[in-house]
Length: 455
Image 1 (cartoon, rainbow, N blue to C red):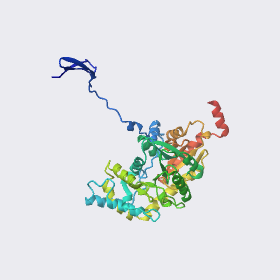
Image 2: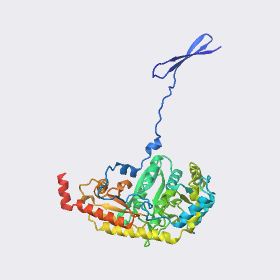
Image 3: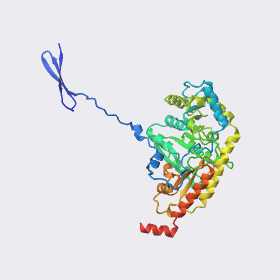
Image 4: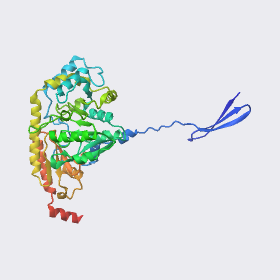
């Protein structure tokens, strides 16, 4: 009869060693030494969490400055239209939410892609002859941010790359890098109202390119692409066989002298995932209601992408059911004058801000055409005491208590972004303080040269 002899060697903090011998018919055969495992705590953050990086938070958190205590703080940095209370949502929107809450019909789980009736409502609202939609083409999400996350996750694998605008919304890079997806930045051209540098864009495409992100209207630029420019973008995507992820959260938020063209209405052959939501146009970013519209009239995505979105949506079981229940009412009963009034305020603020900043030596604002922002170039050669846009905006806080985001946050140094949703009197006061700040630090060509020589 065979038998085993196991000797345990080890002491103290050393892992035990098992010396195993097999006795067979009187003979002993050593099976060698096997290390045992002494349990010990070794909890570490995941590689995905370590790859996750928000450049806005990193830069803002590193700005260790205190505002001027003699001046009230004016923040032109946060893209939340609700902060100052001057842009409330419409009464029909809040009424819809109250009715749904009182009904008690939307307290349970919904399908992960959203209630069928709510998907039908979104499809009906956005469908048009040039880009028809049905309920099956709509995925409801927890805000537009999750829509972008799902779209990236379904289109790109780790090791592939995506094409992202520069300057551009920082979340694209944050999400992509956390998933192990490479980000390639294509340039926007401030001298052409932030149109895409199409030659540069096309030069970045390779066999690993999974999708092209097009953000229109733009955060942070406030730009709106013309129909002809969108057609040129689509021509690049068509030639290179690259699908488009369209971030259209600011869709229809364009000023009166401009027209918004949903990119899917201009192409029948480029597959597009369009991401949108309630946050900006209906002024309720905290309600976290977004959607993906699947435009695939040539069946290039096919069932695979649709099935992939369904599976990915099942990770968190969809957006808030209360907001879903109110969605049809919100979309179809919000009066047109609400949208008009919001845009009138934004256009007025944009004009005031652009005019005021244009008159300041050393600053070159780019006129916006929509959304909630404008970008301002800092002619750094006239402010030689500042190393870059981050230092410029830091000193603006400490001296004038005005906070604008340095455009390094958007991969675009030596600019800063202004949010135009604040009340008019705050816009005027902020611009006045920015003027005072620039006049204090501006150096003409000779003064700048002298300062450089002194360094």
